[in-house]
Length: 91
Image (cartoon, rainbow, N blue to C red; front, top):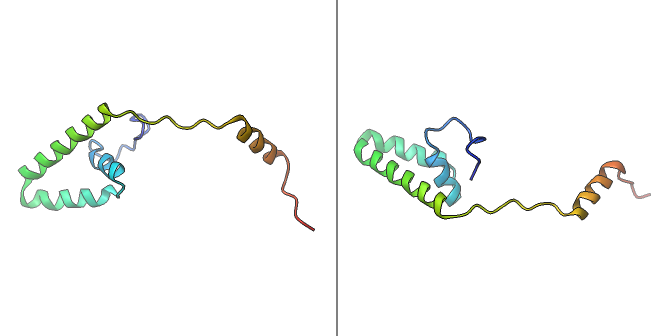
């Protein structure tokens, strides 16, 4: 999940984005389905959206985010060496 401070500001509450991120699909399609549904049954779609919002909040509060792996000293030294020394071509 993205840090709320760096999350894009082009969404309402980020519910579709969070659901798409959790289940591995593009949130655009969920937004399209909700937009189509709101034309036919707005009260049902709003209830579903609220339920999804509660599910997202609950899952975020109950699960811990894995910390990003820190690079090891070997990787850092090799990366620094690669920056200083250009690649040599085989003759």
